[in-house]
Image 1 (cartoon, helix red, strand yellow):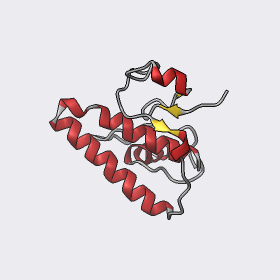
Image 2: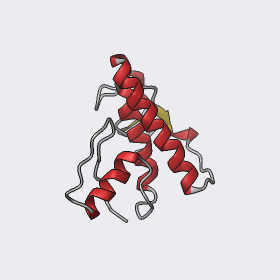
Image 3: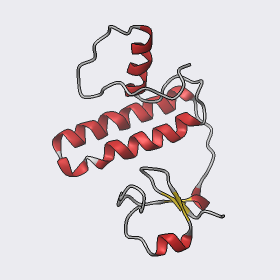
Length: 126
């Protein structure tokens, strides 16, 4: 089956016919603009540059959701995008601060984290 688009938040894939009938993601109910797979591209970037961008996006999404309850979906969207990129390079260091804190917690299990960004375990620790 050929997929046309996927949800920006849950990454579920859908055909063009399924999209024509929907006003939100059938899987997670996100109303975010879906990703048209024909727009997938490859870019060359340094991993550290990508980490800087994703950590700033994570921080901004956290800040916005703390100050504006209507923007709570930003956190999920940033997490979804970062996870999709991280999954392509699972042996690399974490792209998000939440992932970085989770990696540190693996090595220092008694460590406590306080603040708006909390550790989120990754599938594979480098």
